Image (cartoon, rainbow, N blue to C red; front, side):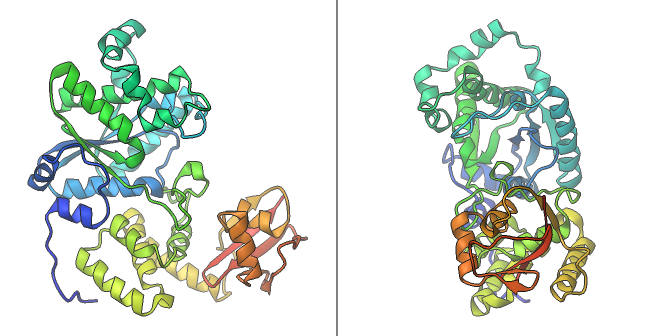
Length: 399
């Protein structure tokens, strides 16, 4: 594939073209990003021992900044992870310190191996702050009105929010201040759902020591139904190949909606704008060939696991769909109702009951090579092979 033109963009313009910039704290940031040599950080709480594809967008932005001459720091929230960032509709379950430490070690190794970023843990500078110092040195810089106006807090007021969750914002703000003072960190990046916490860090740094720091956020990666690619949504694709095999990752990307795939190529791949525009042209001409989906799968799997793993995943896919090898097929073990709609939803083959019903009634589901068109169909066997359309095939074990 030979691009017909060479598009040269400044880094900030390319990030915008890719749809990777949502909120920006200051107009000064564009020039600073284009110039290079900023120390910046991106944070994540260690709620699991691996990152998932929902993280990948943010971390790929961090890599783009690093490739543009900036210095990245990954902050793993050993302290904030013990508290839990407020979810829009419920309190996060607390994890034990032992589990958090295990997750921290897993994330640290993964980030160092894949991205090569420096890793810090906010537990190191938070653990010795006593409660009185916390209130006097940090809490006094936050008014209740300011905190209540943040979306992460405001969305929880009707159903209630604990003081523990309410304090999360201040803990994260403290991170930005500490990194500025100790690492000369001027920039924080994160998902758009973190904007309220990020700007709290900007405010704390300004009020406490009179320094100006900066931030921008990225849009969240959503599927065609508006669901996040994340662990809490039940559709996580893990970056650890022991949790999500390269074959399973290949199937995930090859099955992405035609309407969304070019957006994903821009946001997730390291392909150049020229390459993406050429792929888009070919994709629009013959979407049934899934050229764009294959390009995205190749780019991400190769980056994470190497070219050989991508080739192997592709070969396994071809063999399975030709009926040559069902032993290598992904196997899902689920429990509960054996009604076909419930099975499709519980196995994440369909994102919702309405979508499962649509797939069935339109002839898009086969069980053991028999097309099922009755949404009330009950599966009798304990092990079946379910095929969705022409692209997705899974072995399901029913308990």
